[in-house]
Length: 340
Image 1 (cartoon, one colour):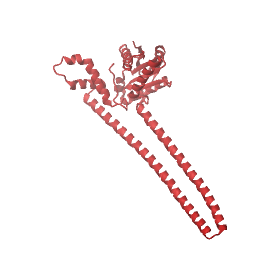
Image 2: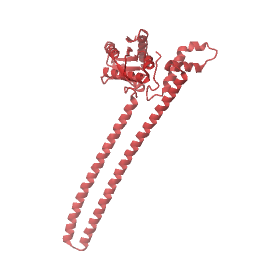
Image 3: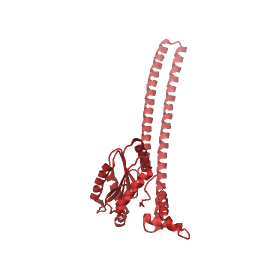
Image 4: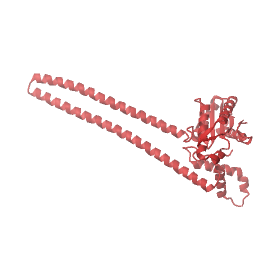
């Protein structure tokens, strides 16, 4: 089905990619009419896609898309500069600690040179008593210096280890952020594409049953028109939390597919069980009362469920689930349909 997507649908994907994908879809659906024209009007084709995708004035939609693209790039650049600055600071701190350790060693070397000088003077003067006392001082100084150096080395080693652990944690956080949708904090479209391919391959190799659910908020445009886009964002965020709570297993995978549409991958789950789980989710969505600016917003959702067929391409699995979602919309919404 033709989907309405938000231009911020996935941090890893350029918003323009989805638009051009829709242009191709629109062309494939209307090529028979286009072939009848004396001259192709690409501008009208593109504007029709923009209007179908965003509604309203095409130029304003393009301006919003351009602003979104610009803002996302600014955010990415700022994040990259901040991370590089923190990494540079960490490395400089480590270098400073190494030089501090060298300074301590230089100081210790000065102490040893002074002790050696005193010992040489005692031996030259043939003062055995003084030489004996100096030797004791040398041995004591060496023991203290060794202990001090070991403490400094251990401190430096522990500090560097903690810094590396912090850096590793930050790297994992950055990686996690790149995988998540910024608005909902569930997985984004790019990560979903990777996971769907892996699941299809795993199911094909092992024979494990897996289901794909495509779920879409009904009449979402009316929510934006009636309450405003911030209210629409609140609805999407609430639905994302509901889905994450409804599918809590480690093998369950919830992603924002685009705009108000979500995708859920259930590994090790047959069609009957998936149908039961989705039916419960639709009941939960129906019962939601989403508050925004002292207004309660009620929504429903439609879903399509497809069981992976051994050997079928990932794209075909997705198309069958999407077709089932389309059928659910066509048959009145607020329901689920099992894919053929």
